[in-house]
Amino acid sequence: MQRNNIDQIQWLRGIAALSVVFTHLTAKAYSVGMTDFSFTKGSIGVDIFFIISGFIMMYVCDRKEYKFLAFLENRAVRILPLHYLLLLPLVIVYIIKPVLINSSSSGTFVWESFFLIPVSEDGYEYLNPVVWTLCYEFLFYLIFASFLFLKNIYLVSMGTIFSIAVIVILGGWYRGSNPFVVGVTDSISLEFCYGIILYLLYKHNKLSCSSVLFFIFSVVAYFALAKFQLPRFIKDGIPSLLFFISIVNIRNLELKWLAFLGDISYEIYLCHIVVLSGIYVVLSKMNLNILWMYYTISLLTIILVGYLMKSMISDRVSLKFKSVTKARRQSNPI
Image (cartoon, rainbow, N blue to C red; front, side, top):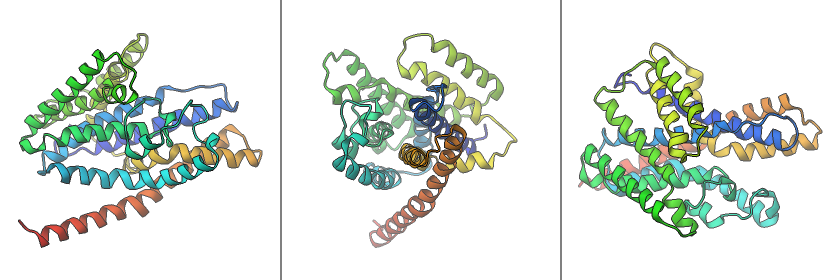
């Protein structure tokens, strides 16, 4: 892997997004009897996303100095606008007819959905089921940003890894049932540490290896670990780590379509369950519960909605934020 080229990260994002989408797409089709095929393995896309986050936060902060609030502000501008945009209609539906939201769950985390409080890996308890992953993203951002004052990427990485490890260890000792404590101390946060370590290897050109060999390792690890009752950061995290190494070492290959999906992966990920539910309702009313039609229309619609959200909302918010930040620096150069 070349240090000046991380386009493969976009491929990973695209793969991770498609993996999660296909899992939920198949789960919906299976639950309503459209197919006898049940696919749950694509949830590993979430683990890939977490590793990417750890890697990219290190990559970004190694090239530009950030302070605590500036870093969190930057991440909030990227994550929150779309989150709340999708959350508002879900809240309205929940108020009018709660049964339409999370009908498969025993309860709904409303405030937790708004404030991104990690309380469960069972995403279906949130208004938008994928929100649980954003909760862990922001928990990681808070911990990571807390060490930016050290102004040294190695100290930042050590502080972050140590803090996450301590939190997870304390969670292992905890014998209570408070959902907030259980959520915050979940060992899945260790997957961000994988990304941090991978970046340090990348920084020193220690990540170059055989792409094919590590792909084989990732597949073998996935099926081997699946046989055991292990924490997710091992069971899915280790294969994801090996897969990450495999993809970033691909050379002399251009995959524009996958890079495109990577560019809109956050938008795809955030909207896909809402879009899937809407498409199913429409097709049901039209008596068109045909598997190939459901798959085709759903995938194309999700990609289209993701692209529109990226171009019409995310990119515009980002440009506005950059102009405001630039004006702020010019008015207060000190």
